[in-house]
Length: 288
Length: 267
Image (cartoon, rainbow over all chains, first blue to last red):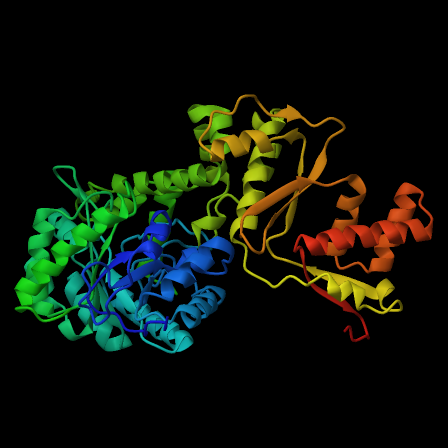
């Protein structure tokens, strides 16, 4: 079997260890984004950095059949500590092995003074933050030798110092750092609900040509706020927002993330078919 | 960097690690949903510890395990890029912290589970084949030093926790509590089978544990033989035979990833 190329199109899933055997037993994708099941997988970068044994063997077996994207959670692009050079080199090593279509992380910070809080923490949306993040994105891209994509995280607080909307911040960031975006439509919905902004204005405000990947996931509605839990199917309201996103963005590789209460693989493939249907309707049948 | 951003981040971190309220003056409306971050921080790390130490969890029960994890995390905030390494110091912490220091089986179980985890996903390396020894010239032998496969690791136990841990892994009820090792403590090794990639483990005799420790410290074959002779009162020849036998076993098990002799080229 020839290893698939390093581009993604169509519809993917986050690769989770529980599903390795199902993934390897399934017929491989037809390619070109017209498959009926899963066209590509995204992996959490940190889970495979400096790792061998069964996890790496499984990863490489899946890579022989599917194109991939790499998604990180510890870059801390907005953090106060210097970027971790060893981490970046390890990330590059992994990228050299699996040749991902996209390398992404989050617009967030994860800790200070050498501590990692292992959460995607919110940044004040200010000029100071923009300068700081843009310089660091350039530094990361210099090490990796390619663009990265930054994802909008769900947030539960905003700062009194905020002077930019998140979509203006991201747009300006793509200009200053020459980076791409990973748009999480569920996170837009969650943050819009929590902070009372207009999700459609967000969608209209981001530069479509910079969006290389879309995330969808489930959330938990607690009445006065929503938490991005990745433990449930995509909510109806998020599907509706996704339909609008596709109209604005055109066909963009789209995937579903599930990180808790992980269902059988076939259930996620069924859910992914919904994304495929909605995208086809919204684009008049153009492949993502 | 300096400025308002750093100040806000330091306050946010103080909030998550120590419950500091000061960050609220920088949050819109005082941050009515700040508790989402409070909750997520500890919940995420507790979940990871539960996944990495399931047998210890079963052994201690929910309440005691949660207390141990909470105490550990309070003293060991993560400095790791991957949560994979969050529990790195847990066994040592249990062994040195009251009340778990008085329950050595807890530290033993944590050390065992951690060692098996290391063997499971340590980076790959090619093990050398036994033929390498046969092709080594007699004059090279005393100078031989060894590199070991990253998956090989050792840990010291005072209780035989293996049966209990294996039962938990199979999702069976362990039928008895781990028992103290007679004449303990004992060094155990964990490693990964090169073909199946399955994790293996076994206890080491005292002389093998000592020889392996020296070999992993990059001592020469001759130095290992001398230490064995000194330890067990063996003559030089018997010590060399014993060391060569151990080395053969390590190579057959796939523990040895490299062999070299200073100033010499090996076949």
